[in-house]
Length: 124
Image (cartoon, rainbow, N blue to C red; front, top):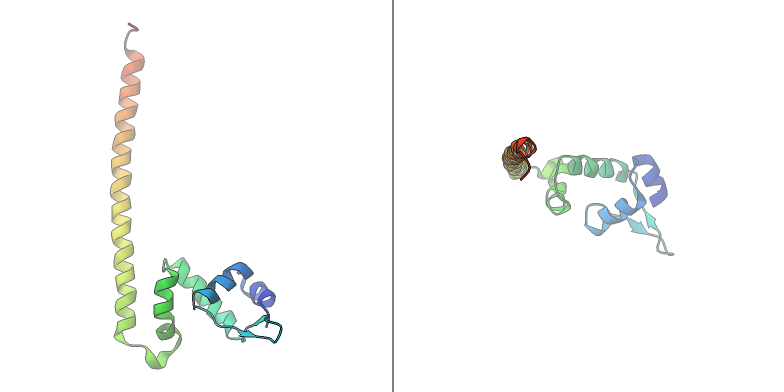
């Protein structure tokens, strides 16, 4: 199938599909005129790539993991270890962001009190 059909069937833009190919996440054959032609299996592959992006994986990490994800014959504990590492990285980032939100809330609270105090003071 051509890139337009793959795009239509997956809901993913042709630009994104070209990016996936560039990153080594998706393979295409080329016609004599240079047009991309994808196998039927590319539909499931694009959907998997989208799912992994939604899960927060980078294209670099995906390129590393996809062979193991898509081929049950070569799945090893290494794959689940890498996925768990990604999960731990995300949880650490969430904790860092949660802390940042708390600090910002304190700053906003301090500023709100300061503004309220300023409006109650008599003008000099």
